[in-house]
Image 1: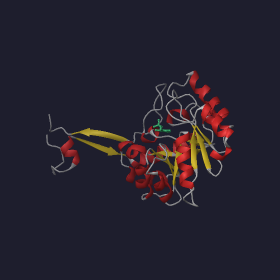
Image 2 (image 1 turned 30 degrees about the vertical axis):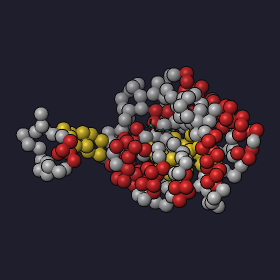
Image 3 (image 1 turned 90 degrees about the horizontal axis):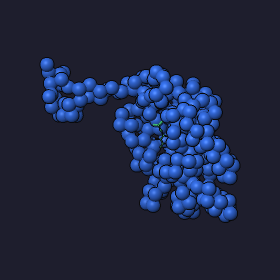
Image 4 (image 1 turned 90 degrees about the vertical axis):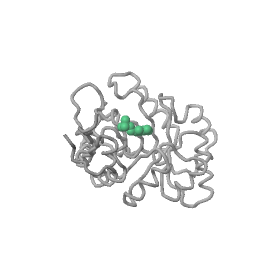
Length: 257
Ligand SMILES: *Cc1c(COP(=O)(O)O)cnc(C)c1O
């Protein structure tokens, strides 16, 4: 049987499959997650083209559903997002400033995550060239060991207050390594580490949980939660039925192979 896909130039015709995105389901997942984490503010992670679903379509829908805080991976994603959300939307760049790209954070009002002393130095340099340095987020390594400031880095910062003076720190964050295993002891340990480490930094709202972390309970919500996958309907763990609505589904053409 031929599928109803008459134009051979349509990407779905050429690919042999069609991706259907349910924007209402994504909005309803956002509202569900914000309700679940009602003591915190629920951000929206839209990195990697909103997980492949199309940031230009997805981000405005999330904003309409109430999101004011967005996270992307790279500066270029932030620039792209800037043009499709309102001016008051806050955009945080997870990979932080890079040589040659940090000026664009200033130009487009993007909040970089500073993951290392090198990035802090780079951002301070940027600050010496502008009166309007956006606020930054600081990431600490609470146990994931992939990125973030270490204890030794925090010692350096405490020994030389000048390194963070002048930075507007709008968020202190970390990322859970094992949140999809709810009874994993690393979860509690990472939360404790974030609280300890943040006490050595300028006071700021705290953020620890991505999608799976939200389902660990209110102890893990802190000030800001950062779901990505759950917005799009992906189950947060394997412990029960998925409470989220499917945000996308694929249909395969039945006239090929
Ligand atoms: C990707 C990412 C998220 C979102 O993770 P999900 O598991 O998709 O919810 C949150 N925080 C950081 C730092 C990330 O890199």
